[in-house]
Image 1 (cartoon, rainbow over the protein chains, first blue to last red):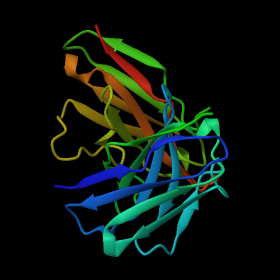
Image 2 (tube, each protein chain N blue to C red; image 1 turned 90 degrees about the vertical axis):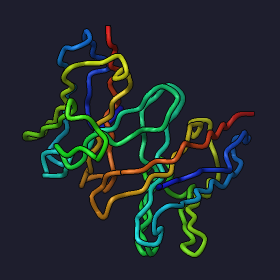
Image 3 (cartoon, rainbow over the protein chains, first blue to last red; image 1 turned 30 degrees about the vertical axis):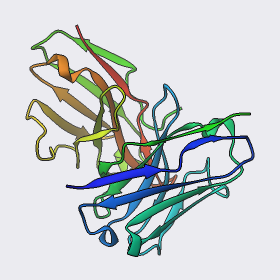
Image 4 (spheres, rainbow over the protein chains, first blue to last red; image 1 turned 180 degrees about the vertical axis):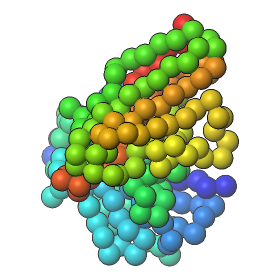
Length: 119
Length: 111
């Protein structure tokens, strides 16, 4: 069974940093591209970042480019999101999502990790 | 403001048919990129409902169907059930933004 489990969320002050992790199991992680998608409280879904299976291609939404860094460790079956210079508007549930081979759609999602940016 | 436009809400009685529209532009749906649909039940993560415009993942009932034409797409739900009450999101890819894009979401209420 495919499982994606996020961790690392929490409360952080504006300007602070946080690192999210997503542990994958039940599939061959190194074969799949991965994404982060977030959802602000009471709002819709917003794509955040993409990383290819071998980390050769990385993309970011304009709203986070230059502040967030996506990475992965295929040996550890793990995906990461380093978030720096956090703002109140970054407050959201962050989901990691598996992408199906270049199709731009997500067939499996984690349960989400809540990040709250507040003083 | 979302790149793809969906109605904020739709409703229907049990057993009825409802449709949810998703309108894009020439740089996303109109450029030939597929449309995908997700269902998000209250307090849970999104779940893929339709992929590649009109394909259902294993386990999704055939009451759910998708279609695409021009710069728009639609999700149809027939034989509405109480358990279908959820938020529904369309998603595609935008070549001018080089980004995955979502609709703003539609809340389905089963009366």
